[in-house]
Image: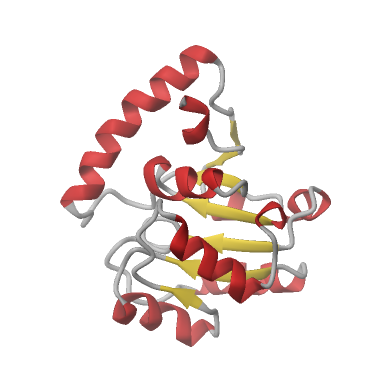
Length: 173
């Protein structure tokens, strides 16, 4: 049961991802969460570093979709200026938002990585569909909704148990 919550990889931030290694592992598409994965929860737009990261994904040949449980206004307001497709109201960890993203990408789950800051939504949802899951540290705990704060408390217990069983990955730089 704990393995469903275990990411394949853990990195400090999106900027620490080795894109060439992902490509070599057969990954063609990236589904990324928005809030606290790409930017702080209350940041409306991507800064230049995040915009450059998206350009580097495209330069490496990755297809990208932003998938968020947040509203159309929030997710669209962030995604449209970057010309990145998005799925809002995804209801992660259920499969519906992830399946919509896979359809947008035109890829199979095994060809797709999910990047997110939460075990109980991003990692669990990706793992249930057989995607390559990558956990990043949250950008900032400020402004998180009460549900996310509860999830973070549960995650601490789950991570502690996974570490004890040796199934939680070491963090890449």
